[in-house]
Length: 217
Image (cartoon, rainbow, N blue to C red):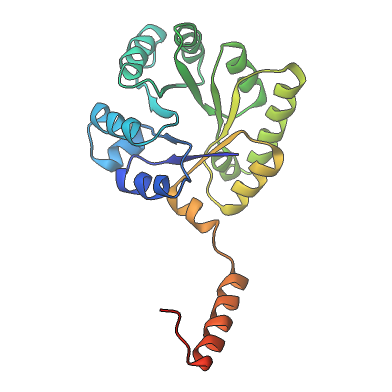
């Protein structure tokens, strides 16, 4: 499973990228606002930093305006994936931008029917939002499984990009189900390395090592 980092903070991306943990980056208007940066400037900087796809989201609501914004964003770098919402206008924009040869990430997906439409429209990525479904007592992971089944049934090339990842369990389950990609905040990716038994084992080893009185350096 590919790891995309869900942030617009350059330092956070760079740290994970240096460890080989970044296959791409996703941004959205809320993350851009949090960064306090100009969208075109920070998107260009991220695209230069990482080799994989960098999702940059349109903010228009009508198809023609989405297409115009999408083309401007895609001109920033060859690895830009234009992010459009899963609305009828967004699907129209997806179809045009995909036919133009651009990567398109269709976001805010909350049903398998929506994911099917996105694949038909030529989406490169579909972004189902797991955490937001969990918030309203629906099973976000079940949606990932349903989309996986439908795409495999018909051989769609659209990649499932599990979004709104909030826990390490979300990450594990997405990998188990067969999501192509997950996008998660840096803190969730880092938390995947943690386990209480690892901490306990390391503490035991260090206590025993201290008793030997030895040094390696």
